[in-house]
Length: 183
Image (cartoon, rainbow, N blue to C red; front, side, top):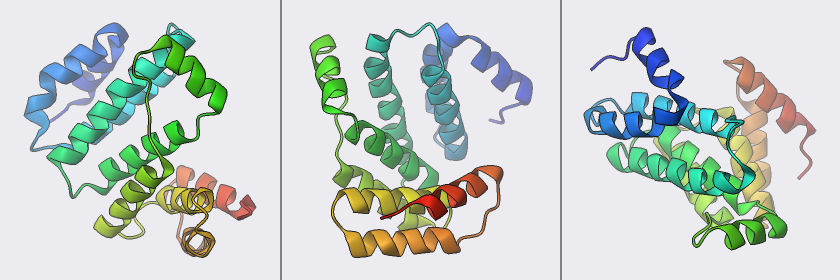
């Protein structure tokens, strides 16, 4: 199965149907995991920027996105990007403030939960699959290690990030952010 630009555009236009469409097509993606990661990224970014979403619906949507990331990892355990994305989700959830956690807990029976340890495991797994594949992964590893009190390892990943080469504008932003980071 090959995604054509028109088909992807039509898929993404239906904001209210994007989840059902993704799930309907999900089974056919098993042989095309990079496309699954791409669609998960696009769905997640659409959901994050969905202005119709109320604050209290975002944790529930976050759980759905996490399920898709986990499924992508299960279907393609050698996909470094899928591992990175799951680590990023864990990192973002783990750094929620106490107040944000309490609000989510009052609104939902099961708010999203994750730890920096889980994020660390996914970021390290991504590096083992494809070392140095993404400067942002190394930067997040440095930040995660710093939060876990692993100062020496945080310095190691920070140095590796700074030594990496920017291949995209996002990489350039990541390297600029890493240059400002004080561990």
